[in-house]
Image (cartoon, rainbow, N blue to C red):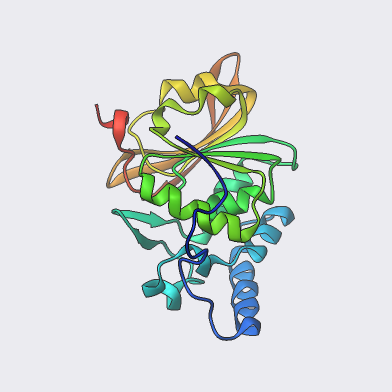
Length: 230
């Protein structure tokens, strides 16, 4: 099943808008200033400042929407903290024309940020309910360059390969082989690896068909499910 970032009949909004638009802009700006010491890519910071994060969280989490930490979104999944979203996006070193694969659509927040920094975004989510919900919010956001697919992200999206960059938002214990195969030579893969309490966010460049590690950061992500658990 493939979904464009359109919306089936029903409400486009998962979480309600805060009553003060000026306050929302102020919260976004404070968030950007919080990230600025470690996030230097101006295009990434501009994208973070342009995405209303409160659209991507449940109403019960609205008060914390602009805090720099992950939040639950249901189905035992989370929306990553803004720093991690910005860090992963920056690690891809995007110029704006790239074709990117995201494994784990989740809330759709990372896809929204990528939509402003890359040329095309293909996002795979194993949980159909999350993918459908993300499609609604991404439609509202106007992310016309994002396509969503319900499936096991371990397999990537072979019909759209190869990709200039791949972001994985759930942690397997080792890099799925199909993702390596679908990454272009010279492309970048950003992926959390490891068991629940011992994970590192790795950035790789594909050189001569193999992954070369160029960066690592201690993190904690939800585990990748599906084939990654076999």
